[in-house]
Length: 145
Image (cartoon, rainbow, N blue to C red; front, side):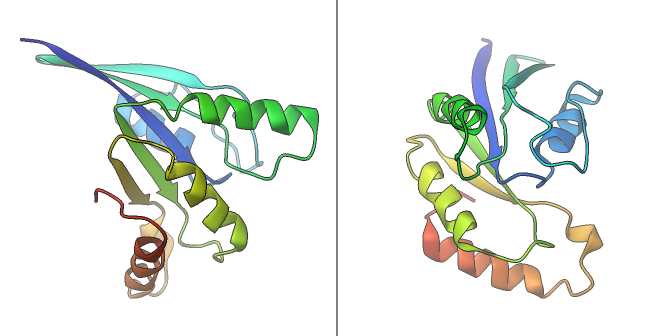
């Protein structure tokens, strides 16, 4: 029996969503840049495993939409809240702001399980900061993992 499912990769700008997609697929599909909002539309990549296919969807970064372009990018993100699994990517190097809490508010609209993925941990000087970050996000939403 084969199974297939959609996995939406969500998060704030520059958290490493595209890098994660490329790593999961084992090839460069999405452009990776330090410039925010490089991904402006959703990018889909398919991972074929024995007995399963996972369709990963890399989305633009969740941000404040003050221009028409930004509003369109946010519409793209909202369209991918209908998914089988969500991956909410967090950058522990960036200071937590109200925009992070607003990003979690969007994630709360996903009815499927959502995993909080803390990226860039290898670049942290103090690894104990990860536990504080986990607690902060756990207070905002009941992530599946």
